[in-house]
Image (tube, rainbow, N blue to C red):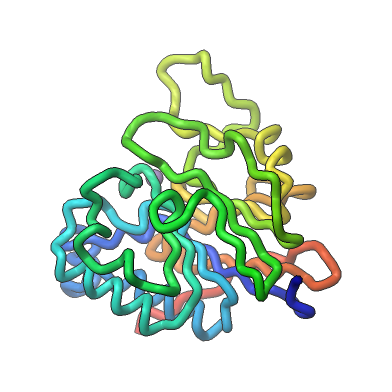
Length: 240
Ligand SMILES: [Mn+2]
């Protein structure tokens, strides 16, 4: 089954909710960038919001702030998929264990509340991503899925290099390259880890960094056209 209309995917990354840096930048409100993103997703009538890693700056976040994030996501009503990144990997004793995030019905945390794929049956949409599971290196695009839905979106948190050389030392961690991007078979690859918004690959799998809300000042809007293909544009954020 799939929706007989375009599917609107809103994509951001590196929101870095915390009680220190982000709070200082936002008059004491370390969740402000996420609030701004959720408001944009609602205004855009997003079918799905993708948080592509480093949603939280670390796991050492006050419980009250995590609870507030839980409430914000629940109250937004936006279907949200969170991919754990290198700052907020899917470890035991993670901050989501205590802050109520696991109970938010419209939030899927890949590798925590679901596997690496989540299928939205009513949309005919599958979202896949490999979560960071610790603080070490990994290949964010290793072993793409056997897609079960017609519409296919991948998420990854890492560092794009057109032709990564993993034998080189020292080098950046979490490398992802052109061949791996094309091999995902996704219609859109939502990337995180870079603060700037930039397209790094074209068809068959267009791949975009959204950039962080505070640096890019935008979210990406990927519109999966009902006839096939995807249109991508940047939507400015409203911080008022
Ligand atoms: Mn990162």
